[in-house]
Image (tube, rainbow, N blue to C red; front, side):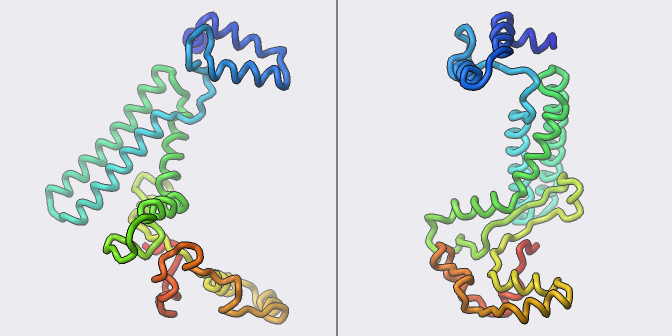
Length: 241
């Protein structure tokens, strides 16, 4: 509390005490006024113990993950002892920076320990998120020519770093592929109990040419997807290493 009180200052503490008897629109009006204009000419206002996610740690760790990812790809492109040493040094630097960031923020009472730990976890989940990978791949290739050799047939790629506990045993690069609805349906049917499967087969009929099937061309996806052979489609999976 003493650190918080010092950060807010007398005017800040007094301003926050004014929220006690406010309700409804009066409360929100005072809050928005503080957000946009500050307190006694000081803007922005630093809160106390309410920043559950450390933005400093999130941005720093996100940048370091990108560096480690790029270094690993460069080592695959240029194999040899120098690049292997460079990869080890980058990984060590990432660990040291994260530990130093955690220590300095906590020791200076800028955040609670849980704020920094949560930021690390959220960064790992953000960096390895399939949705983010698909969005990134779409954004990068939106204005690319489909005949360009850099244009990929997949929908994105994900790198699972060794730090991603407890999934570190699955570290590596994975390709994200969109599955046709019939493939999802058949895979789901294969896992159904026999009784349920018989009921579904008796009550419902499905056609591979039904309107439910994905139309890659109408959704802006590359035409190559719809031209794949049946064998290639059967080999596809949502996450193929």
